[in-house]
Amino acid sequence: MRLVVGDRCAGLVSTVNAMLPDAGYQRCMVHFMRNVLSKVPPTHREWASAALMLICARIRYVTVNDWSSRRYLDMSRLDGIMQSTD
Image (cartoon, rainbow, N blue to C red; front, side, top):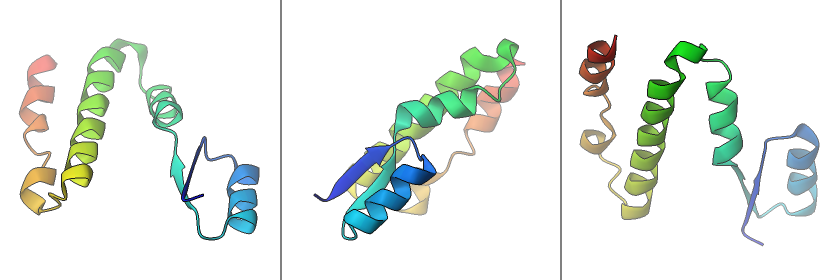
């Protein structure tokens, strides 16, 4: 097994590390997004959710295509978008 996906439960992480030392561990994106959005005030959840999905999609795209240069990871353009929604 090469990859285990989970919700970052401490017991699961330690078990995977002990039983599958060569396997990588990846945080489940659904659990990650739920945890982040639970900290956002309800009035801002719609745009925060859209911004978080955009960031996750960009990271997936860059990772899959090996475009790990700084240019493609630059999220500074989001500042203008976020200010226009206020």
